[in-house]
Length: 247
Image (cartoon, rainbow, N blue to C red; front, side, top):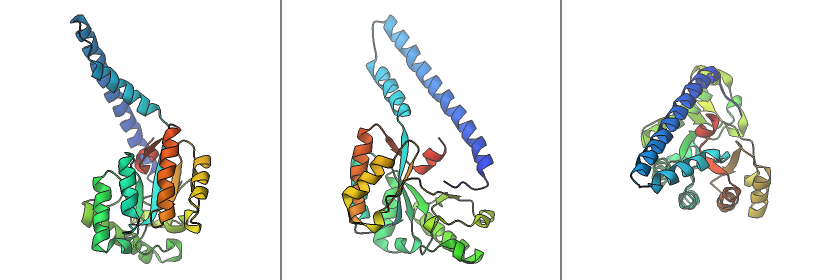
């Protein structure tokens, strides 16, 4: 995956965040242990503390992967996907096309994505290969989509997926946005064969992988939910790409 020239800055932030997280967890578990000891002297054993600690430890040990969707929102298929992800308590990352957001129904879908905990990213306004555009045109493709998303959820995206994986590095001079590629691509847009999509993803995915799918095809939505079920059964946890990149 491609990370821009702010990598050094982000790495420092990551180190500090990691230290704070470890410190917090250590203190939290310490409080739990203290409460357990105090309760034991009184003949009480607060099982909820033990269960919370065990659940946190188990979650931290699960290998992480990210499920991402390009080319939405799609009024026909995205709602079905969101409902399925909600039922499975899974958060995904959606890289949205600006012109697809313009319809009122799709604007509502963007709001729903954000409110349900999904990460929203930029996929340009017209799904153009930005390396074939002038700097000004490429900038506008990203900026206009950022503005649209911000008008709906109150914040501009921090991540984007360049169409066709082509990124103009000189755009980093103008845009504080991180390009995100992928590691597992079943080419779901080329087939309606759900079994083929599922098999390719499930057999190729490993820890820290980023899976590329599209929420504008019914076959892809059906496959995505089957993929979630199968990989969760194998012990994977699904996270948004920001958490995976900071891992």
